[in-house]
Image (cartoon, rainbow, N blue to C red; front, side, top):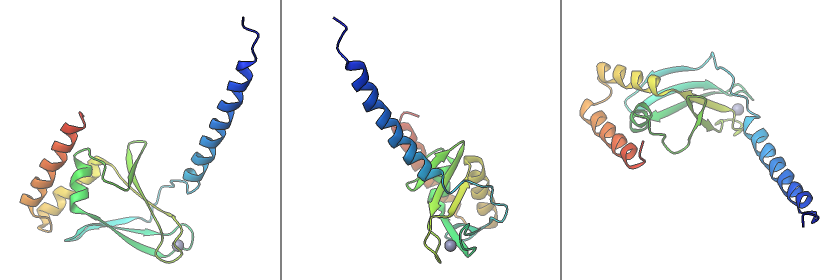
Length: 146
Ligand SMILES: [Zn+2]
């Protein structure tokens, strides 16, 4: 009854799958999410501006995270383009100079909330607008059941 060599075939297929996954993982982790001690951030009227230096060519890039996205991040909603990585939300972006994806800015929901608070206090973020985005984020979360 159990003499069919099905187990071997199955094993072969699985092995290939795992290999494919590992390759994919290696590709994503190639950039290494190093701690960027050189990253600086400041609020602007359009959003929170992160200054980051390219790991490949060293060019300074300014990355603006729009306030709508900051409010989403602060309220536990992941905007498009961000990926979740060990409690942080990471955006992988190409360098404006060499176009390599060597920019890996990251933010935690707590940081985003602090950014928003500071921006409202500084008068660069309109509180009514911020509350509208917050409400939007909360309704998205409610719809996702979380
Ligand atoms: Zn570069």
